[in-house]
Image (cartoon, rainbow, N blue to C red; front, side, top):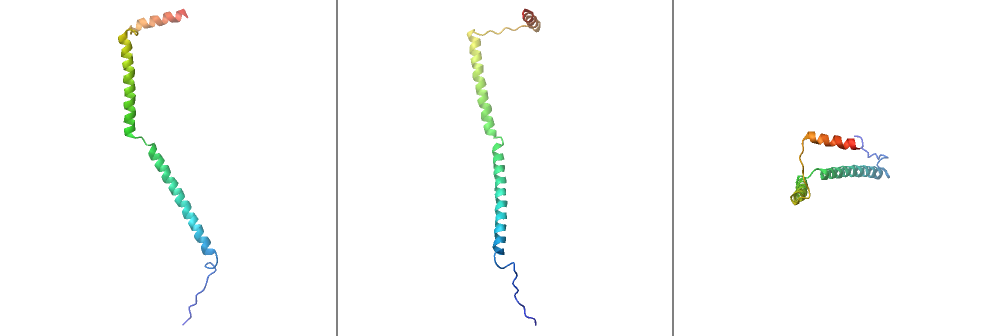
Length: 103
């Protein structure tokens, strides 16, 4: 029978295993870092998605502001400080022609 001898390779001696493990660790760190940044971008994008409750609140606030303005307008109309005169299109066109001819 032949004797089986343990043959050492040059790769397993010295600093080579340490360098290889450090390189693989650095590569793993880079991959994990990039993946984490990708997840934070997704989280920020999720924050930009419309929130239905916030939209309803904004619409309600806008409607309340409109109601306040309409209330002020009604108050002006009832006080008599503002008058609305309804005219026909023909009368409006005549008034516009007269105002242009004066200029």
